[in-house]
Length: 170
Image 1 (tube, helix red, strand yellow):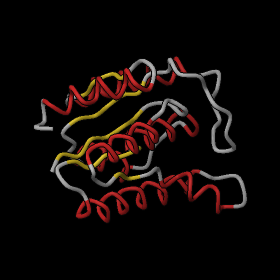
Image 2 (tube, rainbow, N blue to C red; image 1 turned 30 degrees about the horizontal axis):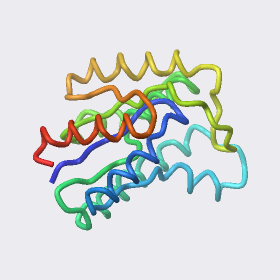
Image 3 (cartoon, rainbow, N blue to C red; image 1 turned 45 degrees about the horizontal axis):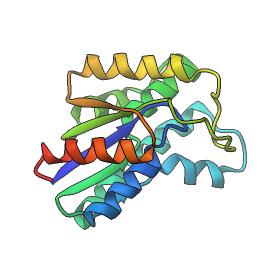
């Protein structure tokens, strides 16, 4: 099974593209757990919440993996947790860093910032999208793992992903 991870700044279409591809390939997808957690929290999150969110995100990924066919589309992973933590708090929990290094994905997809930012109670950084995108890009290069950048409208993104999936046997 190939795990495909979508990453990047907020409001870049990660959830939508993961869901649409899962529908197209008749397989499971892993939603972003932080959204559910923060909606239920009832107060501003703290640094300690990020580790809880990270652990639950990976648990959800592992829970949904057996329900997938050839592909599992994952909306958000430890790179988001690392960037989020370091950007907001100036540091990242070692467990998150360890998971970032040891989790295997067949492909990481960095979603571009060319789609409009959509307001949402969970979103914080409408004016820092380019800065954050550049951080994600540098982090992915540092990981040395395979990744692609995904730009364009919904249809262009889906077509680019389908071509990338062909390289994985899709």
